Image 1 (cartoon, rainbow, N blue to C red):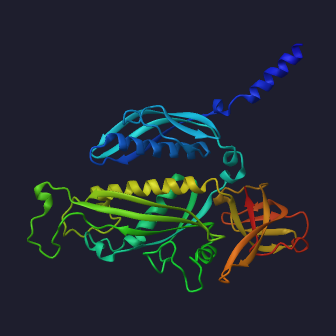
Image 2 (cartoon, rainbow, N blue to C red):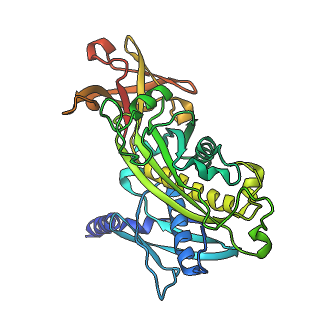
Image 3 (cartoon, rainbow, N blue to C red):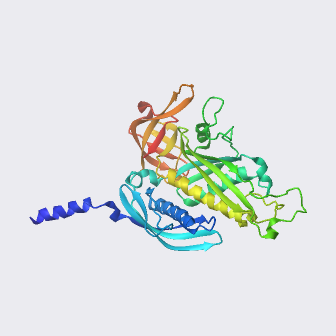
Length: 397
């Protein structure tokens, strides 16, 4: 009878909701206050803090936000695998029109991501150039370098998060037709050439974008140096910052994520100042601070979107029962790690455009040697017998 009671107690422990094992993470979120709407800014800042906490806990959740009487209270609910956790706002601070909150978030790990090996490895991301849709808008402040400097700053923010490894290739412009991006077609009928770019850069994902609008929202006279600056009259000189960001899987070319970041900042310097995008002076301008906040938000979204995606690396050499893969210690690979081998095939759609297909070869490889940028793995038998070839891949789910 005593043994039966013990078994029942053990069984009950396993049946308890996993929410009881939630991790408590303290995270910071920030948002711009528009039209003195503190509640809206608090809402968006808390969302950012929740995303940050979810990334730090190694899990992924779907966020369910609840407002009470127009204000986001300390009982914000988030759902993960059917369980409810709490996000409690510990403090908030307003600095000008920026609101910063500190929140404690209880997060239950998502078993599909946190218990699998994919979250152990840093996936590589190639960040391309971001073309400006209306080049004339760069005249204010001499921001003509924005197409290359903005993606560099985005890559820096992604690397600061610590979950991805971002490399820049800002000399590459993906879209021949900015208006229709990301749906513009190339000469061969394909939507983009990201698979070729991904292979050239040796990255798993491609982040690209289009700067839609950096135009001013006030009347100015750029050619009249005698015109009195609006700053002298204490009038806000508002300026748009609208950028679309797209994330592609580099192996299939599939568009995984797209989002528009739409902010407004004050151009609180002289209209005749030529400060350039990304300069030390630029980040002190209110508009620059708003841009920095948008970049931080987009980097957080990129990390959250890709962290639970499978880790994939190319096989670039085969020799006997050993294969070389294009990822090493910088990606977090260690000796003894195991991966599955997938064969790469090309299939053609109705327009005869090549599409990449990865098929499970039901072969495992064990890592024996690790270098910073590549690793050497060992198969159970000779690679030729298993028909493992260059450009096949290894995957960790």
